Image (tube, rainbow, N blue to C red; front, side, top):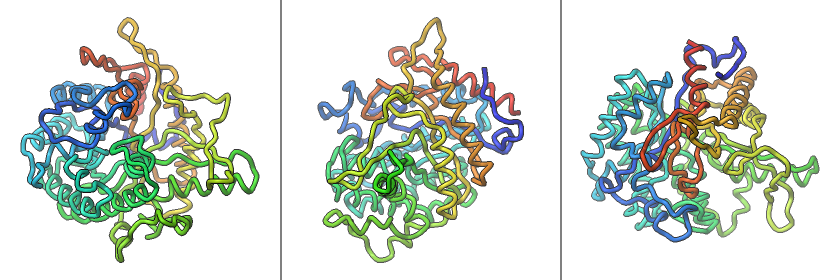
Length: 442
């Protein structure tokens, strides 16, 4: 079985890039060879992680990376998206930890030996704990520390990297981490969430010219996640609720990149209004070589008398194992709407995937829901391209089952099954279909 797309689809062309994605904290393990990060602290806090687990071992990727790169190569993909662990490559005094740097050099060289392009994300949520202790993303200084980190690690890794992304999903770092507290560091304040988000975007802007100078041959950009907002009904009140939710959760992170401003509802923040210095938006709105877009699901909203909007869980819809509605039309709608709203650079779909309750049976994993999910969402990308959106690549999330943040190891997103006791890897049916699709395309 393989994925089916129209023969005239751009996704069928050799120039379209297919990849798989992971993140450092979720797979690397080897906690003893790096500094503590905010997720170590969060995992050690009672009742924060669903299964009480942590990232100390995870998928043991630090030890098994050569086997994992061979696995990636066996899938026939063009590219691999990974993230650098800031606390693995930097000492607390700001100097490079050469042991950590050497791991990434070896990993990148292994990818290069297999002709796999490296898409590297500098920040996928694992802020060093010593920086959090000094204010974390609530402190403007952290944005400058990030720029120093970007400078040193990009020089150290050099031309091994095909593409650099500054941040992965600043919404999750800012909103989930500092505003509602369900991600590390677990703070709960609207003012904190807005301020952290601003400093994250500032960090992105500060790092962009540094990466351009150090790595002139690489593609430089940022990765944002979007959960398109739909009104429950056609009423004006519900439509306005969806519009406000879209501003707050989605446009908040992209509008400053292109329009040098936050959405109009910024004016309504009151005491939660973040401190913004003169010139910040000029720093943030650096030219992008690409925009990474992560998409999983949509959200539905209705008007609420006390709040601007209220999310509604629809009955009788198909959901993944993590509870997210499967609604591929939202993927097309999202891409087309962003294209209409902003002067977008080329786009890479940097994450798209599905959590399923996978079971290994007789050496196989029959993950039909995930297989169907990828089929539907590849078609949704194809539809967006046909409507003029410049999508140049697609990364499946994720390469392998891993530590799924607040869900621990209870949710599986991988196209490769991981037995966490033995560290055995088994390609699932969705992964075999992905491999066969890429081979067939060639």
